[in-house]
Image (cartoon, rainbow, N blue to C red; front, side, top):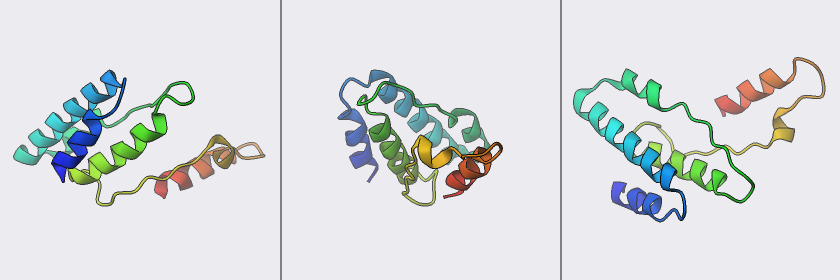
Length: 105
């Protein structure tokens, strides 16, 4: 299964930095598997995916969920997709609870 996800990462077109990032995380996860120091993962798993429309952000995020599940970082292979309208509230102070609820999904 790891070989299949690695092939999928390698097939990303024009996403050199994303591929490099996956390789760094793969190495980190492998190290953590060998040493049993899961707390080390927190440092490298905070990311922000940015880019113009159509540049592969959602594809990258979906692949990220599969990758983390395959490598044992996440217990389930899930990807929750939300847009700004689903997160933004129509009143002051309402956005934060919506974002928290989305993260818990």
